[in-house]
Image (cartoon, rainbow, N blue to C red):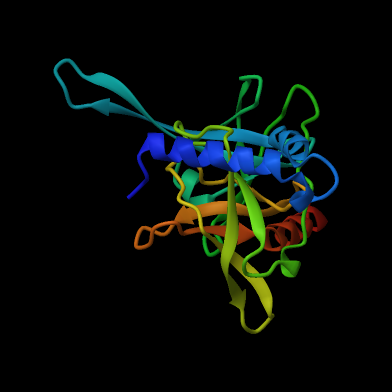
Amino acid sequence: MFMPYPSRLILVIIALLSLAQHPSAWGDTNLIDRIEKTKMSIVTVRTELTRVMPTNPPKTATFSRTAAGLVLDPSGIIVTNTHTIIHAPYIFVILRDGTKLPAALLFASAEYDFSFLKINPPYPLKQVTWADSSTVNIGDPIIAVGNSDYDNQSIMEGHIKSLIQNLSLGSNEFLELDLDLYHGDSGGPILDQQGRLLGMIMAKRESQENSSIAIASNKIRLQYLQYRKNMP
């Protein structure tokens, strides 16, 4: 179950006050400024499905779903969760200035729940800066940026709760966080203390409070580099 909105708002305010009062814990430059720059790389991904309802007379209804996406390349390559766009006949990306553009699916991983989309933006987009997710440890501080209707663009502070690794490769596949997230936060960024992309929000653990899962950034980056290498 998700936390009621007023309680969630209090947590967001506390996180912001903590960052403002303890800047030394986050390095010698302004973390909030770095986060604001990273926010420029966040877009909204919207899927739409139109159906004719069996009414008399028949009526047309459009069903939509929204999530976040992150800009990987200024030319318009976006990463988002596969579960938000799978089987959707129409996919759109909404830029920060409200421009709505149709998106084409380039790559989809059901196993790791991330997909690459392509749009043709009217101007170069701001791409994310990568962090090395192989260097994180349990207890490390992280920052999440909300994208749901309740916490859109809000900054939330948390920590890495556990690491889910590929035993054969010894690499971090997923990061478990001590955060509760809303529907719509999927695809949003998890940032390190430098404001760099450490992971992408995947899901909340319904069986546990204060527990959400993010895909490790290295997993996304390696697949993206492989995709770029094999591009026609």
